[in-house]
Image 1 (spheres, rainbow, N blue to C red):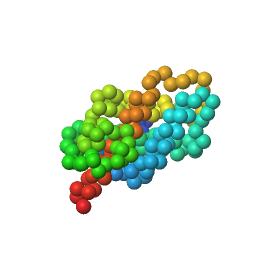
Image 2: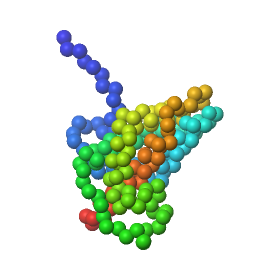
Image 3: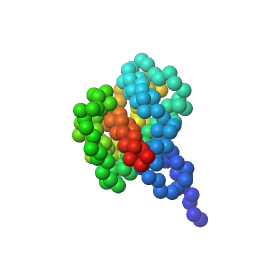
Image 4: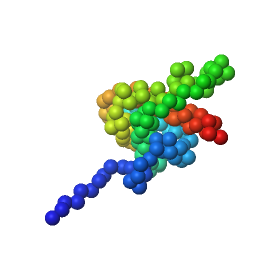
Amino acid sequence: MKKNKTDFDTRFWAVRRKHSGLQLMETFFQFNDLVASKEKLNNIINCAVKRNSWIKEDPSVIFHFRQSMQSFVRAGYLITLKEKKWVVNIQLENTSPLALGLLSEKEYRNPLLVFKKAFREYSVQEFDYFMSGMVYFSLGVYDNLPERNIISPYIHLTKMLDAAHLILERRGKKYN
């Protein structure tokens, strides 16, 4: 008799077909605004670090955001596997420092560098573990604090959000 195993992995997409990393990122930004996503990520981190506070949003919204961020990280990993160059000759003289965000000038010219650097330091599973831990600590009051460095993955995720938005923005200008 064949044993049936239940698959408990969360998947942002229900169909088992191949997806493009860019398509997944477009889907992410259709449901999540860049500024709102960065703000929500910041709130989750702040509440996770503070001992006597928890996030005031509905837990289902936070859980859905965690799932969409997991999908976003996988989309970024897919993009790094494709090794496409997203370098566009951009004059940085015309670009304001506010447009750069956390990105350096080199990363602004080639946003793919952000993803490559992030996945050199952390694996997809480590980003999943980080997001799960931060959501766990932000939803309640706990005596313990996260045991790992949370600043570095947080900065990587924020930079990846900026870089992905920049890639999609440039892609739209290139084909329109």
